Amino acid sequence: MADTASNDAKTQLILDLFEHDIVKFGEFKLKSGIMSPVYFDIRTVVSYPSILATVADLMWDVVERGKAEFDLLCGVPYTALPIATVMSIKNGKGMIMKRKEKKSVWNQKVSGRCVQRG
Image (cartoon, rainbow, N blue to C red):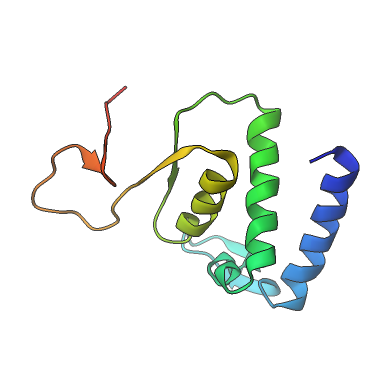
């Protein structure tokens, strides 16, 4: 996205997040125990395809600006999976999934692709 388009997308995203009660203001105790005046219920983004696509696009812009080099995306379960999936599809990058639950047998295969350490 060009800078102006990116800024417009960010502004619209902020408005959409607020409109759909995805961003909340108040006093929130986070999982870490830290108190925060802002809470993002990012799990609900999947209910709004245009918001999901915008989040993925803006995140991809950050990846491109940082000139990150990588072969695969990984969306950490469960909230990031839909975002990573959209980023993968739109940008032609392969994707792997990390299991949240531990399996008794682990054969270095994640989502059908072999993963090499390092």
